[in-house]
Length: 569
Ligand code: GLU
Image (tube, rainbow, N blue to C red):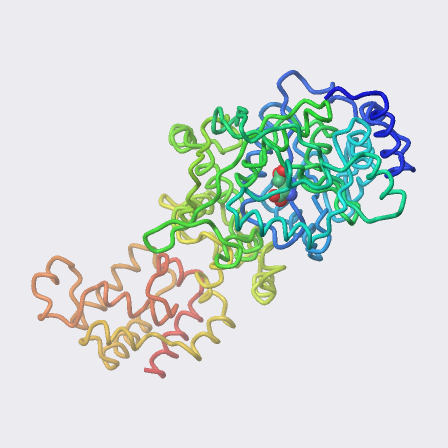
């Protein structure tokens, strides 16, 4: 826009009237926040920019994975900025929750906000409410060059215009002839500001919705959209910037190379490109991540904060999901190449994988919970007993204090419990996918938990429901005879031979084939026999190897559990 000298002078006057105390200029800021020259060519600077307006969302985690991955693999920087310009919606503790999630999932940033009121790096402050002066400097510049103006419209007036537009089937918004204050003379604007009238600051768009613009989305390719013609708000009545304006100022002065954000921001790109241009800044690369979808019956829908507990990062932490399992899973839904790569590189992790932005899906990423759980099982299976114990201790200390105390009573014993079918096993048991389930899986090893459970749910009688021949009398007899014969010094083979002998003497068939051919000839099979022992000793139908369990429980507890069951049958 060519400005005549008089108009130009008035713009400066208006800018001064609005920002009398702003002495710094955009150039000063450029010197204060110089290019990141220490980074090598091609290094990517990425960030997450969460708003502390509620729980930490799984979507933020998912984005942080991409951000950190891209920054690390290009030897760049991943930082965190807190976007707290919507102070009415701010939630106490939200920043801490975000940081806790990043820490838990090994996604801590190299720069920016690293805790409540804690940050590091030269491009701060990294919390928007503390960057007011920077936005004011930039806004003042836009007023000076005639690209921003004060808007005196009240919310009621705006609503009225909006309603009239809707009623007349006109695209709603503050643009063109509907932008009342845009069309006021600068003299009137100066006058009204001088008179102390309330106003907000708007951008003066130079676009037309009849024009098209194209830009590249690194995940989606070339995108064409209508040019922006809206005079978006830059500074709100509370003196804080809108997302649009803060995004432009912050990502410029923090030298973000790639803005990776949710696809809900895609329609705003034309606004942002125009704002970057007006400020004389180079726009960053954009990557819009697809929404996370979830199955709901036969259809798919967006992960919902209200409906899905899995939408909260805190849910994963509280339930004790292993971070590495969740990370691996998120990478599979983030990059279509990942699973293939992983199948060829079984010993490597997502950290070794080269992430390509153009392999991101744009159609939405389905969060398949059973698959997530399976991947977590795989990761838990890689831990040895000591590692598993350490992880469960860390988790239970915060989320299951009773279990934590029980584990601590005898750490050597707890380690042995976790070592069953794990340490030195040829086939590792894959039954745990989150720490919350560990107590349930191993509860019978810990007498207090086991005793409490028996009071409310002793399941031995359900064996009779499963198979009528296993009457209480039969079961009592099995436990009585077997407990007398049990020898804790037996090797596994000896133990099994002895069990078969007792079983046979009591009319059980020790050969499964033979049993299946003529079940009516027997009280039950050897599997039924060992079920009775298993349930008496553990109160569970499925457990790891019962020989190992009895060894670990020791003779005293093994026998007394059988006797106790006889008394209760
Ligand atoms: N505060 C914005 C949000 O939470 C950030 C979007 C962005 O990453 O630029 O949606």
